[in-house]
Every structure is written in structure tokens, then in C-alpha cells.
Image 1 (cartoon, rainbow, N blue to C red):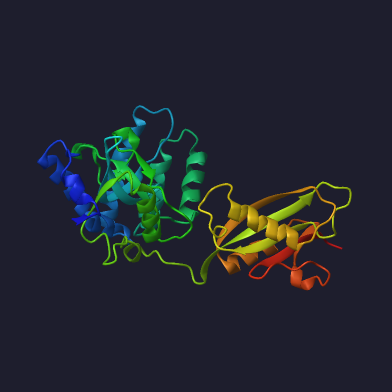
Image 2: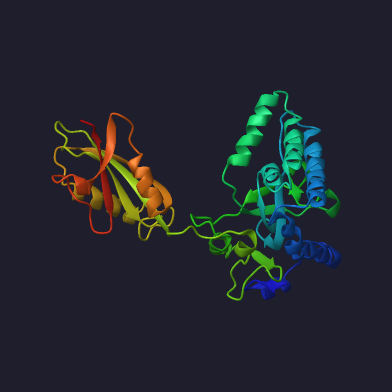
Length: 341
């Protein structure tokens, strides 16, 4: 097992486990993460897919027995354990997905196997059309691995890697996630936000030599070509008797957050950036503005979104194509939203 910084201090305190045997059982579950993840790294064999679908069905059946609504299992593979002393709560650190049925559909060895997943998913829905729509939608949505915390439940409550609060194994996303698709970056963020309130053990092999989570390569997660988080900020001036000619625009801003900002809804850096952008238009006669922003993982994606931002009769025109339009500050790109002639 890999010991987190400060794990020695934990060893000197009251144990988070009821017995040595219980500790060994929980740690052993986390140490099997490579074997448990392997089936989900490529198209499954027919035998493996049947076994996984049966585990999923078992959990689905258990959680629907006393439920008035259709609910679905998640998938979570533990690779470590966290203890929160203040809450006296022990939880697994896991990698997994919320829409386990969609994953089983994608990794099915053939069309017949995928249809078996689809049929099993749809079966409990009174409105079969709703069930079909939900499954087909989940199958086409962008697939995303997550870092999860899961309740540590007795071994006899587990059905393979499938979990749900209905069988005593609820899951929730780990904190600290920002915009990078890499689980290693997400885990670094979680480590930062939890360092003063959590004690952690990580299974051997789950971290690389630099202490970063080492699951991205195994799961085929990589940065997009041209990866560079940026923001499109929309600003529209308001109020006043006479607004300037160019009073509604988009600015492509560097970074997923303004420099110095760490996820707060307001900060001096955010306020300073907006003031810089508004002042660069040199508006007169307005008394206020509205603004919003969206994050994109590449500049090309942001530029494509800017071109499609407006709906008729308006369109987004680059400031470089409008000789009389105010230009953005250095490092920013700008489009004005204007009415088509």
C-alpha cells in the first residue's frame, strides 16, 4: 500500500477499523483495482460481458424492490481508502462511472450483447418509450470516467463493481475537480481541498513515481490536441439614453479562470478583468452591463462556439473585420454581436 503523507500519524491514533481483519478486508478490496478495471478498458469478451451484466442486474433488482421509481446502479472500483476523523467516516476512493448501463452497452462484444443490456435497462419502465430514449441518449453522450467516494459496506453487500445507496453503497463525486479531463489533475485538486481533514491510504500501483494518480493511461484518458482552457465571456452594456454602436460582444479570455481566482463567484481578479474588457470598448452613456462566461478546453472550440453564438438576425463578427470597432486588450480575442444588414 502507498501511504499518504501523514499516514504515520494516523497509525498512532485510534483505528478507523473495528478490527485488524476488517482493515485487511477493506485494504484488499482497494488493492484489486487493476484486475477490476481491466474488463472496462476494451471491448469485453462474451463471457465477461455476461458476467458483468448479471452483476448489474442483481444490483438493479435489489434497488428496485422497494422503489417507486426506476433507478440505476453506478460502477465504482476502489483504489484507496479515506477516513474523515471529524465525521468518523470511512470511505473508499474509487474510479467509476454513473451510467454503468451505458458503459456496458459501449463495451458489448456484439450487437446482440448490446441489445441484451438495452432490454434489461428498459424492462422496469412502465413507459417503454421513455426507457428506450434514456438508454439511447446515455449511449450517445460523451463518456466520462469520474473519481468517486463510496461507502465502505460489508463484503456480502457487494455485487462486483456495481453500487447504489439502495444496497448500502452510495457514491458521490470527489471534490477538487476543475476543467482538465485527466483524473490525475482531479485527484491533485481533491488532495488539496481535503488535506487538512482527511487521512488516506492508496493502493500500490495507483500512484506514479511523482505521487500522481496513474489511471489515465490505463483508461485511455488524454488531453485533447491543442488543450488550453479558455473562456468566452459575453458582455452586454445596458442603461443610459444612448448606447455605443458596439455594445454587445464576446471576448475569448485566457485560462479557465481569471488570474488569481480560485472558483469564487466574485473576486478582485474577476472584477478587474471585466473592468478591463468593458473599459477597452470605451463606452459612454451606459449605466451598467451584464456578463456571463463558458469554459472551453481548446481555443479552436471556443472560436467555433463564438461563430455560432448569435441567432438570426444577429451574427458574431470578429473585431478584426470591423475597422471602427474597439479592439480587445493584448492576449484576448473579440467578436461583436451585430444585426445582419
